[in-house]
Structure formats: structure tokens, C-alpha cells
Length: 70
Image (tube, rainbow, N blue to C red):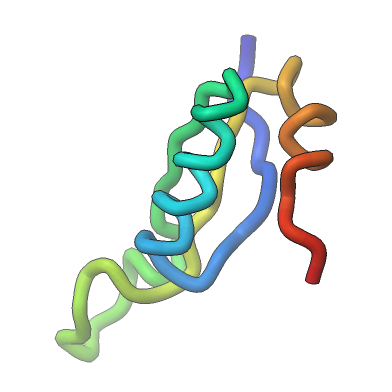
């Protein structure tokens, strides 16, 4: 089973919060910084910048239903 991108959030703190919601609902979750934030050369905090939230492809539909409405 392959990981699929659920969404991209502003930073790792937001990603961890969203993963907590998913995990409580039985959906495994991970996250990684996007190329944009990983390549930051301005010396800013490593936790800042766009972060991709990943779930298993088979959980994508259920995970989308749990996303907070914007």
C-alpha cells in the first residue's frame, strides 16, 4: 500500500495536530516537510514551512472526511 498526500499544512506543528486527529480515528498518519521548507536557507526554525500530511491510499477518503473545513 502506498502513502498518499492528504493535504499540505503550514508547518510541522499543524501536521502533528492533524495526525493526532487522524490517529484517534484509527487512521495511520505521517508527515514530511515539502521541498520548499526543506530547502530553506534563511536559518529559520526547521519546524516552519509547508508540511505534507500522508495517509495510506486506502484511508484517503475517510481521512478527507475528518479534515477541518476551511
